[in-house]
Image (cartoon, helix red, strand yellow):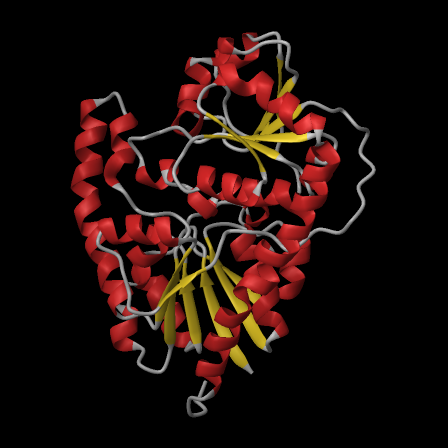
Length: 365
């Protein structure tokens, strides 16, 4: 049996990371046992049933984590973000019989420090950036392949010195969802996810530019007082399971998707890395998105909803969708099954990496 190590040092809950969660399912179905390295305890009981075990790295030094991986001697190691490559960067040159992959979910850029008002924080951010980036580059050079979500993200990734001759394009989508949900219909718009200024900057700045539209904002972190004071917005702070979250958003008609920080290439050039976009589309919900690279083109090209330039256009966008709502919804369900279903779009990648690992000589564990 193959053994795969998933490095998840970013520490975000699996329920908000469709790629990580569904990857466990795909690898398990192909006969691999999965070991997850995570900085804390995994609380998702369904996930725990699917993996062999988890290694809590919260109090482990990087050297100890690397040694643990080497002792396990897995067939495959997959990293997702800079937190993972900071640890694993020397391993491809040491563990010659293990296949390493970079399934990149966050493009590592220096611009996060620009949002810090404190000059000291900006300087520290810049000082840390270069050595971290060098480790990421070293790791990628030892990889068998890398994954990014689309051609836009591939170009931005290369701008930050990360590229590979073998690059897979896999959107950050979910499995098609054919379940029926029985949440009480609320209608109106739903925005869910991060409510910080790094994502919602221009939305918060111009939040008073729309009215007469019911909008629910659901997030798990602190919310701007401007959102709470707007009479047309209902703010809900919650941290719920993937199942409850899906049922919750299914009660609304339209999803609002917004990314605005042009100082951060990872956020602004979100493209097909937007997990919440695909969560809504998997339910057949039309979307209204702001005019950001990649995302706007995808919505226009595939008639998934309406693209707006600013919040003054929100009312017209809602009326456009509601006038042909069932047509929009039926079309989205059809195109999702055909173009975005994660099982379909990821199949060749997982078949390839498992086949490559199986062709190697049996190893002593």
